[in-house]
Image (cartoon, rainbow, N blue to C red; front, side, top):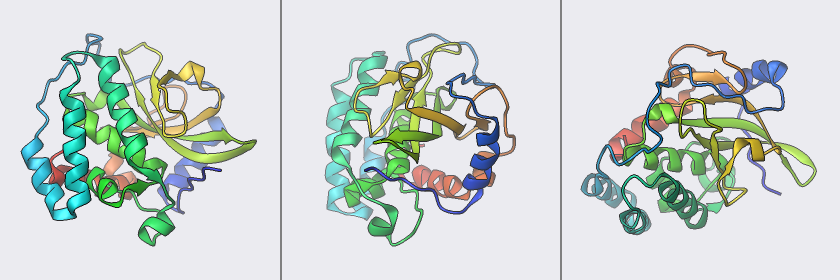
Length: 238
């Protein structure tokens, strides 16, 4: 059984509030999402040198992981949304083994940066989602097209806390779900096993369903998110 449990923090308080209002649907609406073309393109270069330099400070496994990721990204044709998403999703699902934070980091809840996860070779659901988010941002995907989504997942007859990454091809599109539990990328409408609670990115926090913006700076409300954002910037992903 995959078990990904959040620690006692602002996450739990937000989850409790949102669960009261949640319905089993994926009616995500980006309040800050401007209409744009469906093709994401490569608006920003993959800063390989900077990321490799940061990886060398973590260790050989991180360096090897970055080189492998760079090789995978180099095969993605320009402006090919589907291939880019599939490449990033598959890379981290295969490169990182699932491991609970307590075993991996000696902490109940730790959000790792992509290089930390690559060095360890392991992580939990947040770490998969964060690594995919940072990598897609580093290739030029706008923050407004991505959300990390805290969900309740039906797994083997149980409902467990879980986190996935959602990508919006356009403002009114059914979001695509990148998940470590289900290897293929599916529209949210084809993931009835997931009940969204709340979602966030580097710009805002939302309730998991509907249009309500929780408000405030996500980095201030989610301390672990703020910390890993800072590490991601230092590593060259942001």
